Length: 157
Image 1 (tube, rainbow, N blue to C red):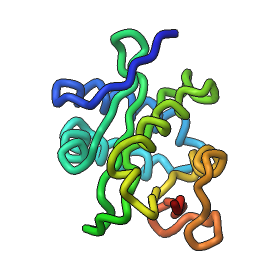
Image 2 (cartoon, rainbow, N blue to C red):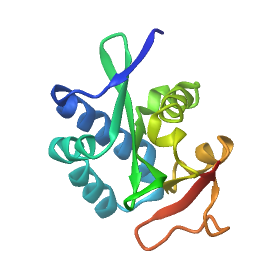
Image 3 (cartoon, one colour):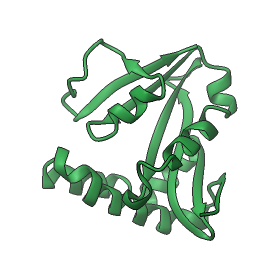
Image 4 (cartoon, rainbow, N blue to C red):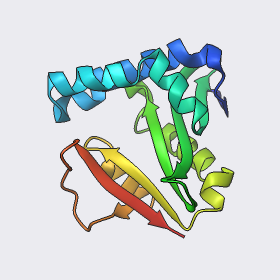
C-alpha cells in the first residue's frame, strides 16, 4: 500500500464525510446508540467537515488517490499554548495496521502541536486505547465517558 498525507482541500469534503460515516457505522457502532451515531454522521457531514477544516490544520491520508482517513489539530479554547486534536477517523479496513499512527505522527509534527504544552483530545469510547498507546493520558484520571460520550484525554509536553 502506498500512503500519502496531505492538507485537506475543500474538494475533499464529500469523500471525507463519506469515510467518516462508514467508520462511525462500522467501528463506533458497538460503543454508541443508533441515535448517537446518526447525530455524529450529521455533525460530520460535508458541511461539518468544511467547517472543521476552516478552524484547524486539517489533513487527509490517501491510499493511492482514495481518501482513507483524516485528522486535524487546532488551537484549544483560544489558548496558544494548548491545542486539540479533532476529527481523527480512519476507515475500518485500515485500522490496526499502523496507518492511524501515520495520521497522528503528522498531527504531532504540525505547528499547533509543536507550540503547545498540552494537547487535548475528546476521544470516542472506540478510540481511547489507541490514543493511550500513543502516550495520551486520561485528563481526569478516568476512562469514563462524559455526558457527550467522549473520554477526555491529553498529552503534556
